[in-house]
Figure 1 (cartoon, rainbow, N blue to C red):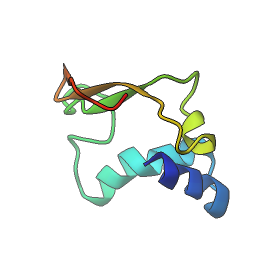
Figure 2: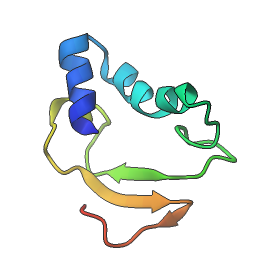
Figure 3: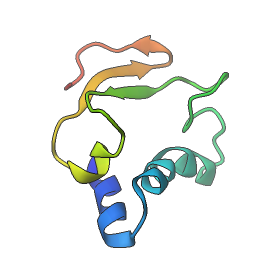
Length: 82
């Protein structure tokens, strides 16, 4: 996914914010899913915690492992690659 975000920024002229929104809330909206794609009460809480100062690193450091934690359905997952 970071590679797709990087391509959106580099080749499609999106800002990192636009690319991240498109990959999360925008994708969920396209699928008509209200339970995923955003962090809000009632959402599933499937998310990753980045080991980076900002989400912008997703766009400019593709291939660099930035995931420090994975959460699935509100519970911290174990055995992830980060």
